[in-house]
Amino acid sequence: MTAGSEYEAAYFTWLRAQEERDHLLRYREYLEKEAERLETFAAATQELADPLPRKVRRPIDHTQKPLLEAVGQRRNVVLDELRRMDDRLQAAHAFVEECEAEVVSLRR
Image (cartoon, rainbow, N blue to C red):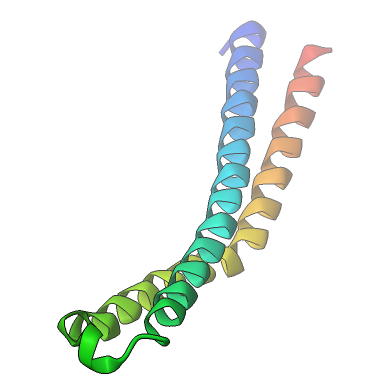
């Protein structure tokens, strides 16, 4: 491999590493917003129904438990992803720095 093509390969690897890191950052933002949205939705679902008499809301009451269980499952997955995000971002940042160092060394 020539020095020029080795530099190009390192440079494009660095660009892809930056892109992947940026995708992870946006994914973390999405997960944070999604966790908040799900929490708000679950709370509102219960709060809106509470003041109504059970007799009136009986037709939809049987769907509330499965709905909240599904929201809870999704929320658990979102929170699990958030718990792993710091390690993933740290690894992505380290890889970007490693790639950048290689590009700088090959540039000389």
